[in-house]
Image 1 (cartoon, rainbow, N blue to C red):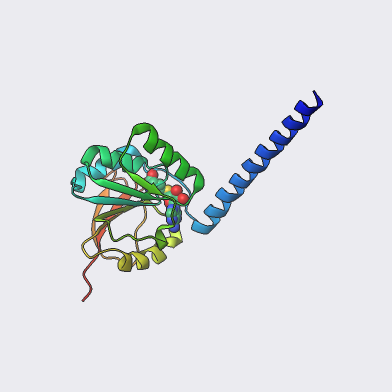
Image 2: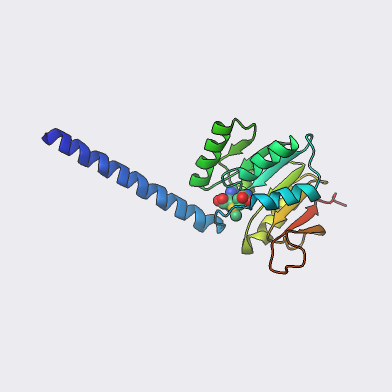
Length: 187
Ligand SMILES: C[S@@+](CC[C@H](N)C(=O)[O-])C[C@H]1O[C@@H](n2cnc3c(N)ncnc32)[C@H](O)[C@@H]1O
């Protein structure tokens, strides 16, 4: 009886410490990236695919893919190859779970995309927020091949030349848009 009590206490302590470590890890990741996990609504991804052609020969990278819902949608609707980069542990595990349970081909890696090889992409999708956009824009100009299309949801990249804007609700100035860019060849 005593042994069961001790074992129970040790187990409870173990899982409490594990839970606390996970919460601290998630908070530290958020402090580091300064980008919380927020999902692009599926209806907006559908709208993007109506306006931006992605073919089965494309390779689409989602920089900060969250639970890989965007990649699943793109894989199913276009047949393109898809890959996601995610640094938040919770979002990464959910993405891996989605891929396994839905038998998706998409690949998700637990990596900081600022340090990853991005040269395989023909299309880059991202939903990143705020003052990190400047630093990421500078990085993408050297990390991507010329001709690579970039689609940013919600936030614009300073210093990149805008090709087009896809409004999710034309006429509603408060609605989010997709900002489409392409990497220019160096002169
Ligand atoms: C706003 S969410 C977007 C999720 C998904 N792309 C979507 O549109 O539904 C941004 C995600 O980017 C991840 N992230 C931010 N900076 C990152 C980095 N440097 N490397 C990998 N993931 C990053 C965050 O952890 C977060 O899950």
